[in-house]
Length: 141
Image 1 (cartoon, rainbow, N blue to C red):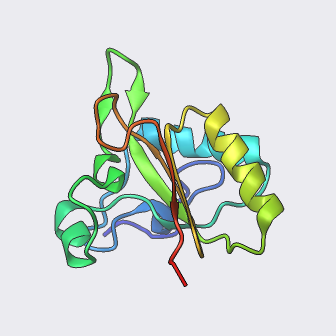
Image 2 (cartoon, rainbow, N blue to C red):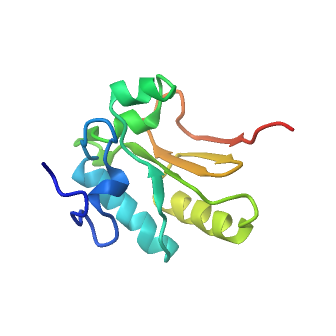
């Protein structure tokens, strides 16, 4: 059984990025992208969700097009790794949110969702339904 405390990159441990259902982790290339984002941001990111296997994604009601499902997909020809990251930064922490969004755009993330209590970042292939999207996930009041 893998050690949940295993250090996968300089700043990310296994338990932060693995699928809660099966324990699978993102590709090394996507982990490198997450580390690059962390380095550019300059502060802890504290992921709430990274890789999700299809079974777990379905269990929690995730989208069938969820970028979290892509965390093990690598296009060697394009030298691209795909996947997603959710992090819990509430609305009232506007400066932190802005800095992380800016860092994500500088690290080739091509999809951002800004929600009430979290931010969602993804790198998806061109042609994916979520490619080049920037949208709000705020709940209407």
